[in-house]
Image (cartoon, rainbow, N blue to C red; front, side, top):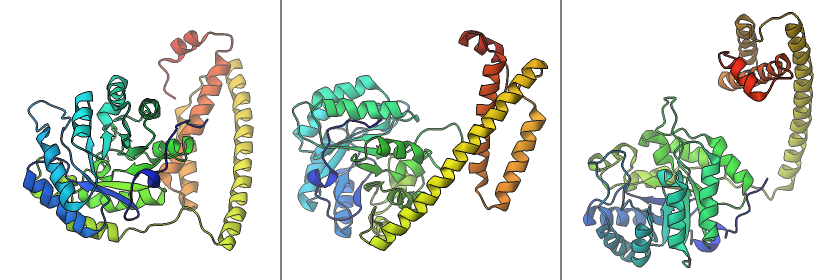
Length: 378
């Protein structure tokens, strides 16, 4: 299935001075001097194509700094006049859209919390009707590809064709080094559904820590994302919001200068021929893998019937432990990633449990199967 969006390519609606596209600026516009000074330093790097700034800030709890408000739009006007950089702000209501358009803001983006709410996205879409302005849409807070797609469709249905997505990571109960888990597979899935959709990575919100930004930024470019949105502040140590994830303009310049920008394709025919040859080998191996999985599931079916006839439970914990230990030991010897191996084995084991459950409960309704297996742990 392909996502049917009527969109213009990024280069047709945004004058990218450098590659990759870099959108940068403070998390929050705090004072006129802070914003304009940061903007001038960013422009002087020659690396930045768009100036961003948070004017209205959605906060988790009341009492926290919720943005300077509409006055910040006037500061953006001055920053644009002095630097020549187009400007971008986040909007979360129809009023935000109206004020931003009236102030001459060049690009709007919809934040993760807003993307998660179809009512909010539709309100923004309705306010955008009749306007020809680029809109970038961040992924929702939680890993729900349908919400992300739905937001893109709502904005597109409003007549906006200058559309891009922003990958800023997802909330997760699992604690890691990142503020928001990258879950790269979500962005890859979106790109697969709509290959012409520009996707910009936001390493600042993924990392939550400026030290990790270079790693995420490089990986995003290696996955063929079209640009980066990186928060920058003239003095991050005194920033009013998200101080740890902002970098100075000089640090941004150094970071971007060290990135390796690679082409998605090569004009070298020898390279292309070799790549085709290697991919053909992978295709053959994939065919074998799927064939072997089919053979495995056929044996699982035999085991399920045998257990059913002998009134034996589906799950034997000791057997699963044996599979896991043996598989990870083999993977270690082959220098395979253990995390990947464990996930693969869990997927295969989960399908085996599902298939045996189906056999054990043949003739029962789905509700009866759920009730019978609700206490089992596969």
